[in-house]
Image (cartoon, rainbow, N blue to C red; front, top):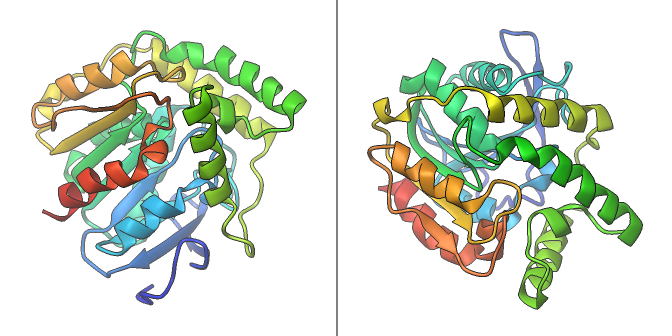
Length: 283
């Protein structure tokens, strides 16, 4: 998709069937290149949950692709039952597109999937950005299940998107950042993605809980350039885990911790994030 006039609010959804039989829904735009940027999204996220400001800024410099995981949004199949299975699906999707190497920008659960992908196909990846993420077996990751259900219930009774509570601090600054972020997610008014089913939430949370209890992986063997970022008050993936994650990669940039922000720190500080992310991805 070479049309430079496209934005994330207008780029069409495409489909491709991978060797595993899954028909993946995806959106792709920006400058054509042999090495695209693949965006790995968060828990229960469909294509409409990518921040347009981040996607459009990357697309101005690189070819960027977002996609729905198996059984999510318009992608076919049943939701994968483990983080490792989701990584294998991502590999199948990338190969179906015909790419031999990609850069990855991953948020939250997308960061978990990226780490599992590295264990299977390390040469498929060139550079990695991991935001709001932590290492397998990290203390507190498995606790995300109870927290998520609690904030989903809070969202129901207050008529708000749960991300208002899950991704942002509940002070004046955080609440305004949440409103701004959720407004951006609604900029696309036509051809929106299929809603995510409750069964997907349950299976993904089970996968995260299991992954959080698994043995830690040795990430020191991966020499990839890595950039890690988070907010200073992440309740979903505790901020110390992002600091720990950066230390595990030998070629990681100094970890970026945004002040007065939560899990969605890169969305609250998207302008600052992009000042780091774009040079990292383009040099």
